[in-house]
Each structure stands twice: as C-alpha cells, then as structure tokens.
Length: 377
Image (cartoon, rainbow, N blue to C red; front, side, top):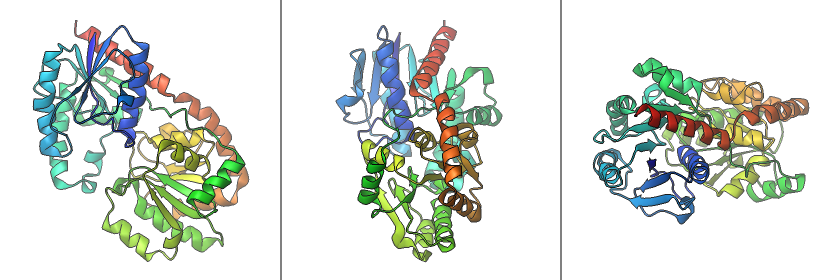
C-alpha cells in the first residue's frame, strides 16, 4: 500500500497540537509498517528530522499553504498531481483538509470543529473558507479519525456523517514529559519565574484559549492571598487581541505575568514539570494535549468543564467554568492552599494518563487506515 500524507504542519521547532499529532503518529506508523510506502507532501523546505524511516519519500509541492487562497491552491492544484504521479492508494490528511479534485480514496483526521462553535474568534475570510469547504471535506472523506468522543458526536450531529466510519484516536504525550527533581524545579523557577512558584498556561495564544479571563482570575487570586506566585504564559502571541491587552493593562499584577514566547520541547518539559499547576481554562478543545502533558509531569491541572476536556481529565483534574473568572480564581486558590488536594490530583492523574499514549493513538489510526483501504476493495 502507498499512502500519501499531508505533512504541511511538520514545521521544525513550530509544532502546535495538530503538528505534534502528525509527528508522533507518523513516526510510529512508518517505522512499524515498513512493508508499506509513504509519500510525505510538504509545502516548503522540510527538516530531515521528519523523514522517520527509509520507506518515506518526501515531496514538496506549492504554494505554501498559509491563507485561504493558498490553501485552496495547495489542496486543489498542488496535491492532486502528486497523488496521480505516485499512484497513491490513500490520501491521509492529519489536519482534516482534503483535496476535492482528486479521486484518490481519502481519510481525514478532524481534531475539532471550534470554528463552527466560535466563529467570532476567527477572521472573517478564514471563517468563510471553513464554512464553505469543511462540510465538503467531511463528505469527501471515506473515513474520519478524531481525537475525542465529543468531536465524533459533533461531526455526526452537524454533518450527518456515518458514526460507524469515525474512529476515536485519542492524543498522547511525548515521552519527554515526566516528573523532575526538586532541584530541577528550583533551577527552572530561577530561570523562568524569578525564583518563584508559578501557575502555567501553555499553547497558542488565541481568544478560544481564554487568556483574558485567566489574566483577570490571576488578578483576583493575587488580591486574595499575599504571595509571590507568578503566572507564566508560554506560547506565540499570534492571535493576541485588544481584550487580552486591556485585561493585562488593567491588572495591578501585570509585572508578575511572564510571557516566554515559544520555547523548545526540553524547556517546555522543565517548565511544565516545575509548575504549581497548569491552568487550561479554554473555552473549547478537541482534546487539549497540555492537560495530558501536565499529568505525565505530575503537575496538577485546572481545566474547563466543557467540550472534550472532561474526557481527558477524568476525575484527576480540577474543573472550572471558563466563563466565570471567580471559578478560575477559586480553583487557583484551592491548588495553592491545599497540599492534600494537589497530591490527590497527582495520584489520580497517574492512573488517568495511562489511557493516553502515542503508541495507542498510532495503532488506532493505523486500524482506521486499514479499514479505509479494505472498504475500497
């Protein structure tokens, strides 16, 4: 079998959630299934680190797909000739976007439908692209994989897609994420947080991630207790908004909010494992990989009671209403003041996290690929 894969989000030192999924699952699948061949389709110069095994042939096609016109051109005019030239049996797209012009059997990985739930968080021209093309991508797919039961039901209810043709393939966490020593925690706090304990947010800084309410909740937390705890925010400010800026400017504790920007994986591991808690009060997630990474680091988690996050957290995290600043603040206070609570969450997380590994993800994705192939015979 020859499988062509959309690998445009394999960007060195810039792996976000979908890019991480693509990297980790394909690393396992290509090495484990050496009897099959893979075409990796990039839209720009790629790192050789992403060519995981000898059965991979990398191809660059154009244009670089980074806004709606170029997305359309890449998928409708760049991808089809590659599939035809290599006589691909299957086109696998880990970001859910397919080529409508190709006749090659296709499988999409759809991580979430946040753009339908929160269109106000997306620029108008991008929202129009999603509104027009995504229903077509769904119905083009011969089979779909998704990263949570929540998103599977979302796809079924919104598009009427056959539930039996959707495979739930939960995300995993990089093996790098693990607990660290007390000495390493102190060194990390010195390096990133002026030697202080800190709450952590990590991820793409986007309105959907609810940074505005987090900043306001941190202000209320600091007003409630006399402490030197910081708020560390790790991630790119690509989608920084006026609301976030206003919340920051109005906070009397803005000097205690530290922005690191994007960091490498090893630094993120140390930061995650040294945090007082991860605060991930997002409005909406298809999964929420940082929740799992924190659990693997023995770091307590505060997260939202909405969308897929309860699937990931189980009974091992502290839930909040993301719309309520007070709810987020109260959870931060509980974590800060209650050592027994922190320890209970860590113990429960050690059980919960075992449900999610990249090996399990890759095996379930491969099972879906085989079903897709068999259904085409």
